[in-house]
Image 1 (tube, rainbow, N blue to C red):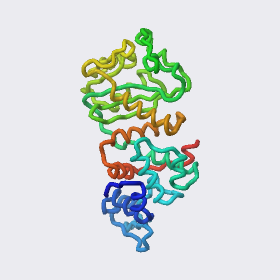
Image 2: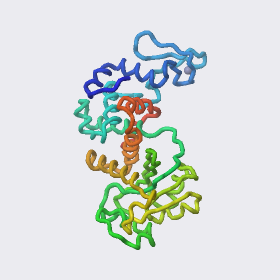
Image 3: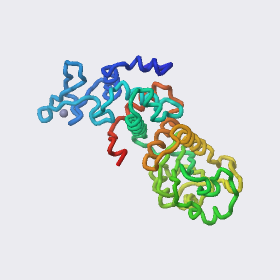
Image 4: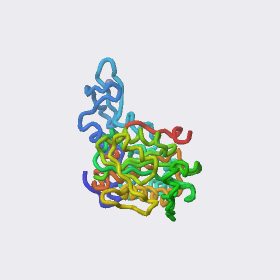
Length: 317
Ligand SMILES: [Zn+2]
């Protein structure tokens, strides 16, 4: 697949549902269609160009298309419009608002909002490998007031000893939603919406995502002070003492990602409800993790992560 110079060129390449379907078939099956119901490759294509296949296995005999079991299943929109949405969300540097998407695709804002979330669900990282090497950990808060952040994270940073001694108690329960981030310095980030930033919440996420022999870098937040006891090699810098870099110890990579995530949320969407925040984190992480790849490659990756479907009722329930 070639790189597209403009969205117009992209729209021209995928101007019919048949072309989109052929592309999906190639991406998903690589030339060997497999039955959605039983997995057999003993299948035949209907000759009417509808994209419908039939399984030849005696015990199955069911019909399927390439979109079965994916976010494209039961779609009310043509594939051409969904492809455009994936292209824009997966390759745009900051994403796009529902209003912009509605105008671009000539659909209602409600449909655009749903489509935006469906595509975000596709951008979620699939099979995850353990991260290793030099790892930065940090937490941030999305939404709410600056005065409710822990002191080292306020925009007008105020050095405070109470942060080191009391830690968690400085996080006030309110409108802010905490997000925990793990960044492997070679360039992979993962962000998790969490209920709180207590050790018992963050540590299991760490263990699930990072190998024990990694070197961990954090700020002085007390939640991280038990990492050495857990067998991780851990160094921290003290932001409250205005220490940001000490040799290799810093958290500038993950802080850079937080600013990308916040620019996206504040600049494009203005408000994001905690319920949907994880999907916005996945969207920002997808762009960050694939930033070195060419546009067409990012599009192909986004399109192939099509398993599972997200329904309107799941979004609004
Ligand atoms: Zn079958």
